[in-house]
Image (cartoon, rainbow, N blue to C red; front, side, top):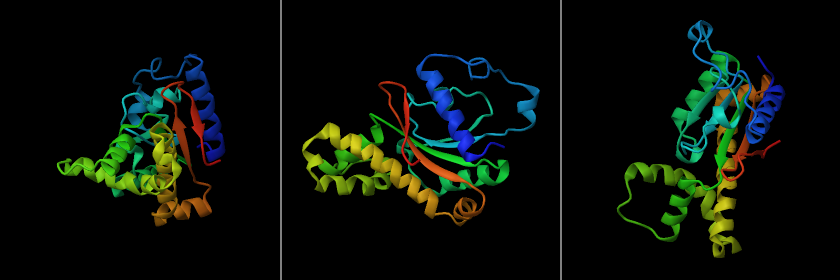
Length: 204
């Protein structure tokens, strides 16, 4: 199993290849189902990403089937089911890198800003559950000068939300805390640019 640092190097190289449109021999496009994959998986990184159709982690990082353990939810928010999935992968497969992958132009961030600035009474309770998890990251920004610049506010909110999710994963699970302290598990944040395809790692 790759160390967290080696896994980061592999993700960075994969994203660079993706941005430069270089397809490797073991990307999703070039790797079909195999008997080996049917027997086991050995993901070298866990990705908690957004459901946005423009941000498929395997493609963004130019990886193949079985390489990444991916959890996708609107706004890359942290809830018990996401924490449990990450605990499962870290313990079951020995995966030592967790990446919270947010992205520019995030619809969940936009929905949260809309709700905070122009509240709607008839919002779906299910959507509201996501907005409520994003809200603490965004609320504090509305008390700054950023509130006058919607573009800058949204950009800052995306990063604040990523950082909040990273902090939650580092400190809301006894299992993950133990692995971080004793077994070199790393939890880092990253932002994908839907405009350029590049991933910027934030917490390293």
